[in-house]
Each structure stands twice: as structure tokens, then as C-alpha cells.
Length: 306
Image 1 (cartoon, one colour):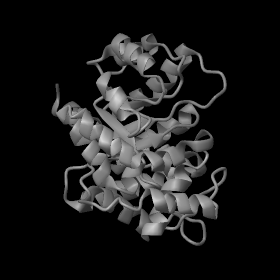
Image 2: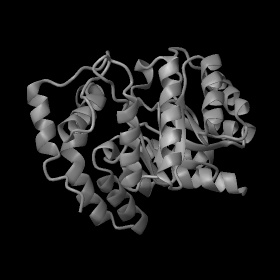
Image 3: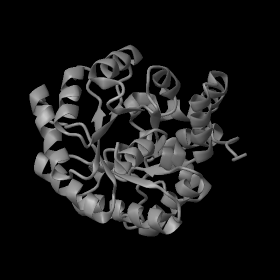
Image 4: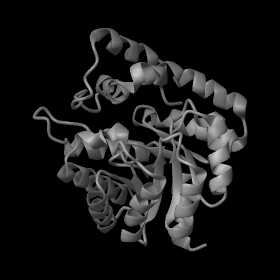
């Protein structure tokens, strides 16, 4: 295995944090706040960040903004003086995904995460062709698949792995551990790094089925808790993992309510209460009402870093 491949796999086998995208009073991306949030993650011990993830409001950003957050994340990781990885989110139509993957690579991102195509008609062969186009466009960049479709067969993932050596990881975000175990087994448990794409609440169950990393929006607020969970899972200490999971459960369940309608809003609300950025989100998300703001406050009340 080449050193670059080893680095890419190491980047994905851990906490894969998805930074929020803060906005200023004029509704623009707040560059200083974004870099400060990325630095906070890095100072907290996180070593992999994904600008342009769903927690970063990927679909609410225009193309220039998606490019900007990648550039800001790359610049901040470089300035932080630590060995860190940037996984740039890309997607939309094929030409846009290819263009943004190339730009991310030029900017210095070592990996790209391809958002699941949102077209209402997705054939498996078309799914393979879509991702192959992106992977072939950046052959020296690691590619992570983002799977949310419970009907996607393991064979499609396996075939893509055969066609594209630089497809190194799968972010699996289907809430079905039995399905995940079967897909990972049949697609290639050792061929890809498998990432629990439903974050901390699901990470212990997916870890037991072969995942070695998990995504996190929670890390924006309390990176030490995400890393505590990771350490417990790596040690095989499921009692400690359950304790961390229980501690964060009210916050994560608040994010998941009503089909995750307030997923990003809850994270930004917590950050606003801590003084790290404004609570503003873009439609179709919406800021929280006073009752839900109170619930966020209660959920994070004892989250002091040890």
C-alpha cells in the first residue's frame, strides 16, 4: 500500500468532523468564524474535517461558497501545524461534481466525499458511472462514497472499487445495522474504510459490524466527547462507549427530531450559546424557537471538557 493510501485510510478511521458554515450579519460566509471553528476542532484533537458536508449546509451554498469553505479549511489546517486531513464535499450534476473535485484537489484537499446523487431516478449502473467520473477526474485524490440509499446493492460498491483504486472509503448512512453488515461483507470489508455516517448515536452498533470511523456534527460543539467515544470504541470498552452515548443522547435526539429538520440548527444554536458563531441558517433550515433553544441549553449544560 502506498503512503498516500495509508494516510487516506488513517484519515477516515476516526472522527470525521463536519464543520458548520457560519454566516455573518449580512448572510455571507463568515470567513474568520469558519477558520476559528476549524481551528477549534483541530485544537480539540480532531484530525479530519469535511468542508461541504450536510452539517455545513452543502446544498444551501452556491458554488463559489462551496469552493471557499474548502479553501478556508485547507488554509487553517496548514496554519495549525498539525497533521490533519481535509475531505471536501462535492456533488450535484456530474460536471459540477467533477469540477469541484478538481478544484478541491488543487486547493490542497487530500480526499473528496461525493454526496449521494439527489436525482429521483438513480440506476445502479448510473450510480457507478457518476462516481467513476468523479474518481477518474482526481486519480491522486482519495474518494469517499456517501451512501444513504438502503436499496443500493453491495455489488455496485464492489464494482466501483474494482474500477477506481482511489475510492477508499464508504460513509454508510442507512439506519440498519444488519443491512450495513451485509453490504460491507459483500462489497469488501477490507477493501474500503467503512464510516458510520449517522454519527455518534449509531457509531457503537456500526463499529461492532466493521466500521472504523464515524462522522460527527457534535464535534463542532464538544470535540472531546467525540474523541472519548472513539477511544472507547477502539479499546473495545463498550461500557464507556455507552456512557458517552447516553451523555450526548438528548442533544443528538433533538437534532434527529422531525426527520432531522433542525439537524444543523441545533448545532449552530449550541455554538451561538457558547459564543463561537451566529445561529443563522439558510432555508430550508430555520433557526430554533425559544423552547428548542432552551432544550439545547439543557442538553449541553454539563459538557465541560475534562
